[in-house]
Length: 580
Image (tube, rainbow, N blue to C red):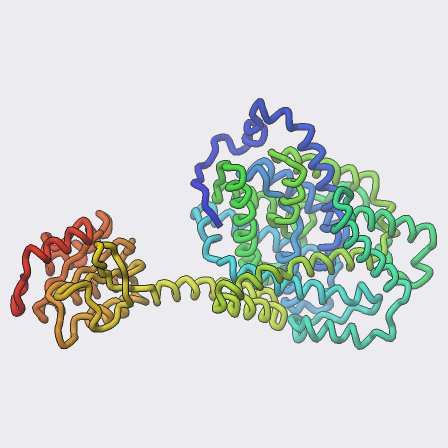
């Protein structure tokens, strides 16, 4: 994604309202409407995420309360919306289940305490990353592997909703089969004989409602219609008496504030890897989303300041009895479609959620569980990014296989394994491009225009001269390639008299690269070849001075341009058997 030069804006705490310039105040009412719209759309969504997280349904509403307020005050982005998220909820679920605690079940008070602890640990990672100014790490997860990762999460999430859609018992979760998403889905399908016809009917109606409103009646939030309609039908026709599972009593009031209780050091250490995985996803997804809208509106954006906001949001989540929160692309797009320009929209959403918690939780007890399963099922399908997977296949087939492998690992092995693989594959792709750069030899046609040919033995720019362009920085993984290619151009039946390294694309050299260039200069001198360097930046020249390259080739063998080096070659016409 495109980058934006980021500078922290003064007054982090007062930024929220200070950023509302005079001409923005005319938009204030629109921001309030956007916030109400977001609440209507997001409340059913985050309630559904609790099924992924394994926490009580009320905790979904909690993610839209204090965490939203915390990010609005401390974050940098004017557009990013935080809240419960399917990817981080799935990582958290996998991490808690993998602890192997006897008797631990999703939805229990102990499970919720561990969920809150994981949010606090994620907050700590985010804050430490801010202290170290590690916002740039978001760039190390490529879009390719992020598409693959989210696609895998989407498949996993969708398959996990099969029991709720059919009304069959949820397969038991234990460590030995934790990551067996396909196996658990198969277990649910094999119990089709126990399926509830009334539950299936509710699921079909809700799915149809969501699809119809989402595709043809977008002005009205389909999720809200499905939830309100299902509650009314469930209350009027007593669906629970017909075998339809309902939520049951939902506690009212604001969340309890305080640190998780009854947990030991072993619980904390057991969740470190889970928190690190969530940190990477939060960092990558939130930064990508915030950066996209900063570019769209040509606004300032500070990744490191957003780390403070995200850390504060997860701290608020951990202290308010809910689970980890993340920057949400879907919720951010909801607000943007409503033309919101400030975090006032998110503050409005928090206010609406507070009103629901205080006065409207009683009707939620009649909500069929199948409704939330249907909502999450469609969310999972939307994460399966077929369009981008096809585009990656069309443009870069090698990257498509990387995305496909990432998605497969998430589904077959687990979310944590998938995020680790995603990070590793992102770095492998980066190193691969620098390990095998498109190196060329420059040539000139009859009209003096520059052309290129592959850097293969016997390739020359003109008789006696080779101008070799190395396309990336020189580091430990590609230094031997540079050396092999240069020596291959020199060790030919009719060796050139001059070999010029075009360093325009070389932005840096590490220790291995610097020593390799110095050794290469000596090897070319032994072959009586003049080794010259063109287009070296001042910083690169200073590095080459330190590594002893300049001492070996002479300061006069640096040229500002390739044309200047070529002119020097023509002027000297060094005869064979001399060093120039």
